[in-house]
Length: 547
Image (cartoon, rainbow, N blue to C red; front, side):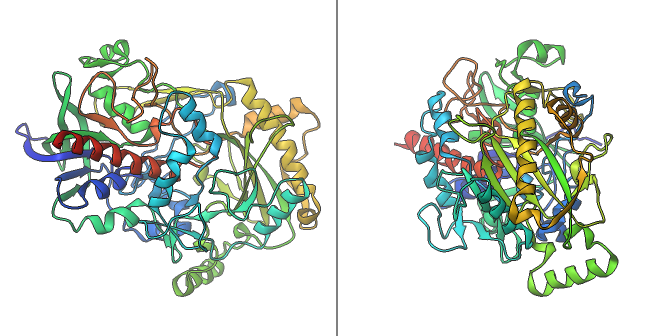
């Protein structure tokens, strides 16, 4: 039963969302003891064995204890299929349930942000924040940092076919990259992992664990933020619900929303900040009419090709004795399949000649699965039991867009995502070209000797029309949504380049939703960098007021 008499808490900064960026903010803003900080997290702790063990991610995504499982509308561009869009619902957010792949994106990704009106966000300006975050376990390298909270490490025990994929890419003319974090990703490489000594190192482990010992930081888990509170146009706090108790959490300086690409626009809209017509339909009083809130939703559309191989792969070693053996290897040595990141080898490639930058990201997995039409989460797809491998490709910079909208003003009702993964024909054409490239990689000499048959698709499509049908039937989301609270300098931007919400005061958004354009990479490393940059913006504003 909900109490009608709210308990009042007060801090300098109230952070909504203890995820990839929120934990960074909690650490940086509480450092030094000057400011009182309260961090609100809707989920629980990140102390489960499944969270710590890298391969546990397969039991986290799609699990309502750890995953928001945001529902989507039927997508006509992929035959009416629906997906649950994952988001971490625990401390560390998606950094606690993801595949631990560490990749930043290319120089042109960030330079594009800067050129599109996000001054201060070029690659060279972001690189110091990537380095500040990082405790790199590899050899000294100018692109990497050491001593930061986030452990980034070379893989401990990659599958033997992962380096063979890199060799196959070389046979097809792609460069082999010893390091891909300095801005050039055009080529193939073994992925780095956000792990420390064989265990997951998300922001809950890297940033928050030590910071929680500080008396000026308070972390409230299982605490649902209902709405941001305003005095006129100024954000003054957050109304939240914790264990049936209504809380009023007042912010002396700022409210910072870090609830993710779906959660952040949802909270803004419930608080009266968003498209006025939509808010009024939901019975919500308008504080600021910002049509861009919830718009510009972007996601990597991906498709995979599976082949039968003549060596053991992870999915062919799933018997009871295999699992016991692998678990023992992990517990005793932190080796074997249980320590693997989701993707072991990657490449960035061009689908056709003449492109200025790669438009495809390729992922090599020493396993494969069958994605049935009614499966709404790829982590719940049926894994094959024979030796198979997968190459999956996604469009780096999709043209298709979607939106997040409220289904109710009630915070217990999840919002609805409407997105056409292949709504723009250019994205479909790029994935058809990607399928042809993946077939060439499987046929390249280093990999060909291990491949002994098609699996999916089988038979192999004969022409572009058949490949288009295959792509539409098998396209998936890649769990990299961004853009719903985009920053920029134009009138339609939700945020300015220092991440302040336009039209109000004392309110910022700091997470992956601020990205104006999707990266040619997985998004977690960038979300952590955004948390680092956002903390500097907040502290700079505090210092300016004190001067």
